Image 1 (cartoon, one colour):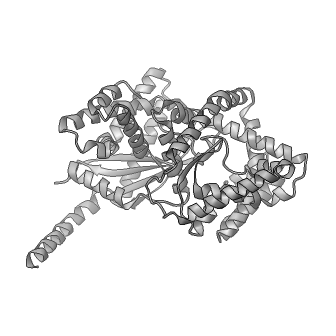
Image 2: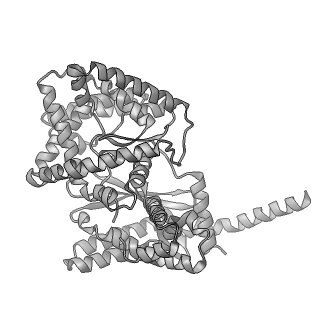
Image 3: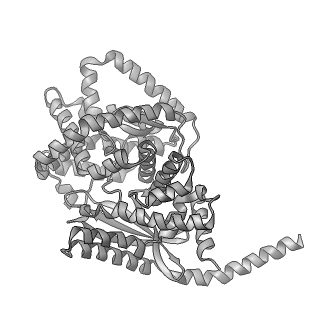
Length: 197
Length: 280
């Protein structure tokens, strides 16, 4: 009994000690600032007049610069990653970063003439959700939420949710299917991922 | 970036979302007495099925997967052979304002059915907003071809009897892939059936005007397939498992429309991962 109480109070003190820190860590305004920067970068690239191949590379870069691709990759790997070695995980994260950048980066043309607006930010669970409204040319606007959280002194988005559809969960499904098709062979998946997307 | 263009995703994965009802309604008037009985029996079974299944939060409940995958293959073939080429021809040959006008017209005529569902859900505000939208667009919007209500702060607020069932506490039921219509759940499917009857206009519009409605609805779906072609193609033809990709995307979007949040389990997993990577 006594020991359990001790553990409990220890946890309580620990939690209290953490609280001010995590409360200061990231404000909704800061998260909004990050997303505003992402939006400015996207619009800057589109209006740059650069060659398509250059714009494509710049778009790919946005993911690695503002997104927490490490968290995205590890969440995507999910349960399949439990038996993976540390070096396999590292290789997967690296291959996934390239894959995700290419896969979504090459769709940048859809953003030509688009308007992107920040609607607001709110604290939800342990992160900040920044709500944006995206209207592609000639289409009704749709909602895109960025989940932002501090990670090693940097503020990065770790998920992007389009009308409720989470990029992470979509990719988890896709990577899971790819892994199944390769008989669960993670090394083969990593090798293929380097060229996919 | 992204899987773009999903203002109501289920539309874009095959053809239909909102009022297939006009089409079905007509069919029934002219030829469908026996089919109607079958359809009613099917919907009744599914409705009961949906009632007996526990609500499924966040997960995927797909006991009919083998059957569903067969239907998905068929849907994909139809898309490849018919819908995609037809929608490309439509998009490339008809100007966007004209296509928009046709889609607006079809969507406007579905509004009275949405008002009925708003009321059934006890959503008086939604009912008033959709009624005003219908009134404005039907008059100054030239019969719904234009969308002045949008500029007045009355954008389309989608709802259907599937949502009404959700509000009434009917559980989601199992996942089903419907021929031509694409991904659904048992609850959403039962809702689609009831929505054949919820639009008051269905009882008012007579032949031959109803053919215009059918045509506008069909074109509106073809237009969606064109406008969101990159997204639809990426799911149907670029995914290594287009069935599971479409299933997930449908369920996520549908649950989001019904107000779902990130599950507790997922929040815990995220916190644990951050703690693992960046914690002290």
